[in-house]
Length: 417
Picture 1 (tube, rainbow, N blue to C red):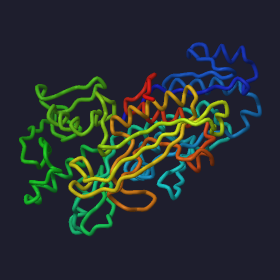
Picture 2: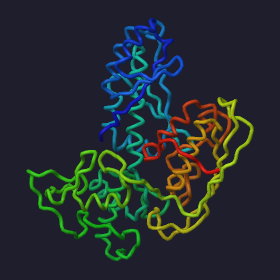
Picture 3: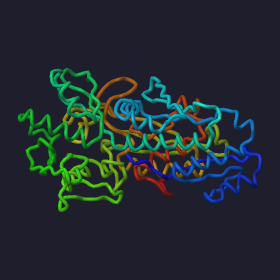
């Protein structure tokens, strides 16, 4: 998986002995001044080099102190998948200088702490590793799907061997398992199961699947001299190959099927077109405002968002088509600051693109077939800090903007009143 090279770190002027020398080092990186801080953007390699240059200029107390790296709250499901199936990439990110430590709580969220192994590690380097982890996590989460499929205990071991990109967990239902993994691989799993059980070929879940190995569709003849498609693993003839802007190539048929599930590159997660989720139809997003403030934004009032998703019947895009699902009502809070209003506009777009909620398993009650949050974090309390989904949390607005950006929702937006 390719990592985003657009990484930003914040340099605090007070941490360095000579502001003039600091500016001389930062100038080639095009810093953006914000009060007594500078924001610098560049590749991981460029910013690691910058951290070495800054180390010699840091105040003694700064060099001796262990750099504070803000923790990251992530989905427990996604983090479990990363630890099981993407451990090699995770090790590459932390390298020999850092330890990435996940700590789960009872709400289905994992708090990830990035801890330097040595106290002399420079904060700019630590911030690079943190942002690289966030990029890796977002790329993984944007490509991940959770689904329930019928699998007998007798077949489970064989499927785990065949589909090594998927994570299998036992479900509450007998002969059902919860499968987590990239949507393309889940589609291939469904096709494989369909071939083994012809009687379910009328199921609406399997409509539209084609050009997958084992599906009875023609496949490409393998030629070791030709490039292989990352989806079907067959060699690609030039006339049947499509190359995306991100330079990754696929069989045209495989890519068409992948884009029918989600318009992202199956290799790196780059977004193509408008991403739409599986949030059930018929929901509402009501916005009101009050004069009270949340901690950290005492000069502003509060934006109150009331979401409501009614109960209904699951469609093809949901884990158990044809079965009922239980709806939900949720309330979230934003400061009525300029940045809070901007995030509100982004959340409105995400709601309209059906990205805020999904049908799945509740991480709090453990029940299946309920409407639950997707992977865009919300503040459901006005107080209590980040551990209680409330304020103060000075980085929340920038974090949620990053979560929305990976789904193609960014920029200055207007929002409906």
